Length: 247
Image (tube, rainbow, N blue to C red; front, side, top):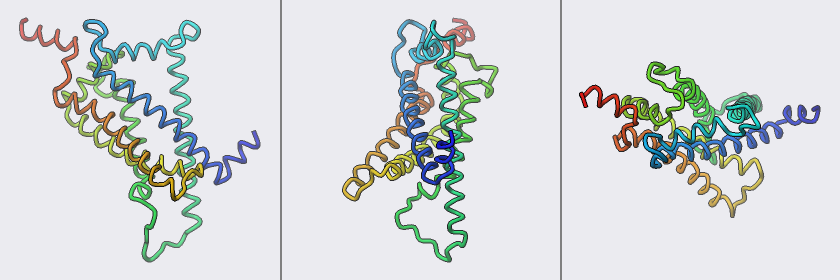
């Protein structure tokens, strides 16, 4: 335990924690977006969207060995701890850097630092706020609670992005910020692990850029598709429309 505390207290240890938790969150993002893309798959059975089946699977993982929902909550707790460690260590490292250079330069010159690097704390804070909003909207259903239906993922997505345009626009903007954050985070990861070399850097930067753009395009494709009217009306909404229309 003392060794872990010593590692945490050191600058190198904080950088290692930021790198490891960053990798964990990147893996989670990739898996999350794969799950989101199930909204585009055909219904496995009539009136049951594939993404709703996937949602039920996540809650039933590990049963009957584990209680219903236990595995999903375990993943959530692990990711919450990773996020907390990531944020705390990033803030502490920023303070260390600031303390090492308390006097500001009269003229600031940025040589290697990119816009993404200079704005990491800002984009991180925005993403943290967005995460809270996202959980309130699609996990707890606190936002638009009157129409939120637990487990009806497709219908909730349809109501949020097709019927309320500001949500779709806001989510795409948030994914742009995420892409900026991921690009610099992935590049910093290679530097922290010592993989960066003059001959490797172009390839590593290209990988970081492709990863960031890939997450932006795939995450954004869901709200854009619903907003544009390309996605079918969810089964429940069809029945409501039929009743209202006298059909």
